[in-house]
Amino acid sequence: MSAILLRLRDIRFIRYLLASVGALAVDMGCFLALLSAGMWAAGASAIAYCAGIIAHWLMSSRAVFVGNVAERGLERTRQKALFVISALVGLGLTTAIVWAGDGSGFDPRLAKLVAVAVSFAATWVLRSKVVFR
Image (cartoon, rainbow, N blue to C red; front, side, top):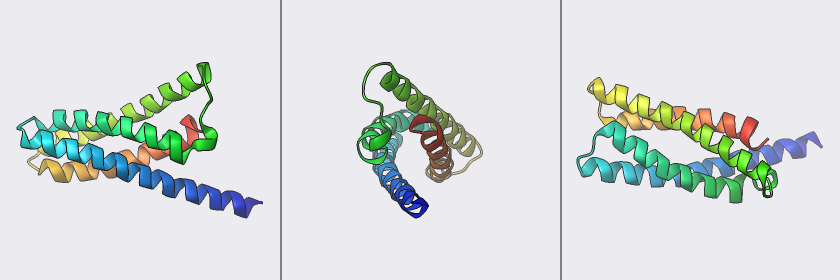
């Protein structure tokens, strides 16, 4: 039985990874478009990350954590709130890393790549252990 549970957990991580890639495409597309429009790098990163949050919720709740999504009512609202909190942790990390990188003279696109990795790890832990437990 434990082998089956481990296999299902691996599949869930792969689905989460794919949902993250989709959300990242939304995030990076918005980020690069806003940078091209002349927006401040940290602001562009924050706005783009918010667009990615919406995309990630849609994919996570429908394809990754399907069996762990609360039905309706107070529990569903609580779960959405926890998801938003986990997203705000990722947003804070992303914005801070891009701001620090840009302020230090690094290319903001490279800083964004570092931020993506850090944010991915943090939100995976929060979502798998807290939001969709």
